[in-house]
Image 1 (cartoon, rainbow, N blue to C red):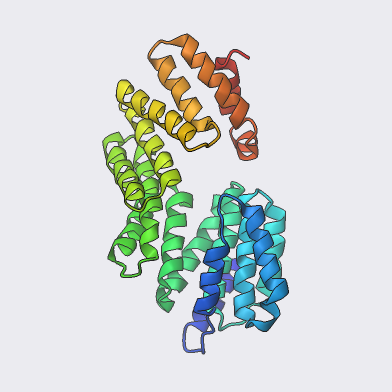
Image 2 (cartoon, rainbow, N blue to C red):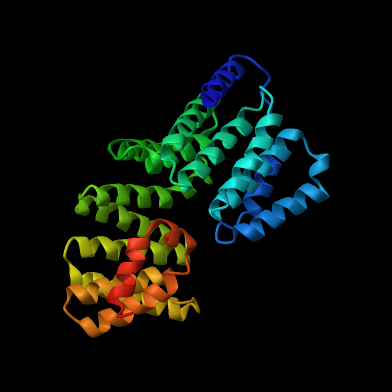
Length: 313
């Protein structure tokens, strides 16, 4: 019921009030402080900003930063803290703060979705999509469509992903173009999960080419892994193995730690190619690394148990 009331409030706000938006400068500050690979350090930067300069900023700017603090909690699996932060923000949002409200919906939805409560997340993402679209807020509208491509029922995910991709491809905002990589990845996985492996391969290859084009080496390695993964689904095992071996070497050359998902995939390939000694070696490595991932421990215990068994432990 609360989300119905929030939607009504948003619709009223869009019908003629003086909409207060976060300043462009604050949006740039938020983007500069984000490190999605280190949400704890990101939270520390946001808190330092609030302590040092936040009091001088408009309320909507401070609230926007706090929505991002909630996001750092979700990324770390601290969902109670995320919801508590969002509860506090909800109490301070006024009817004109459309952008803040949209980001509040996005982060509340992400907290639910990451906790495995997609049924609670989807209405929030739909609200964010509709309100952002009416208000001309391109970036959060794309974000909402992107999240619906993940959280919506499987039969609707592709439509949402394609909507988001169309918006990104048509945008003249160079920052929005940064969504191309995630969109190609999401659409690829949607096709893969529905068994349309050739279509998945097409989008994964687009994603890999885009990461290379923008000189995103870590992202390119992930995108290359997805290409190898779908090649395995297509039973093109030798091609898949070549890519995964290349990735293993690229990580070493870059001074990166051994990647557990790369090890898991190498194990699967050697198993399929009937090379059991190599398979056991990589499954054991994969289990050692991936069993430290708390999300996998909480959500994919069967997967980890299989890795342990195949690794001979």
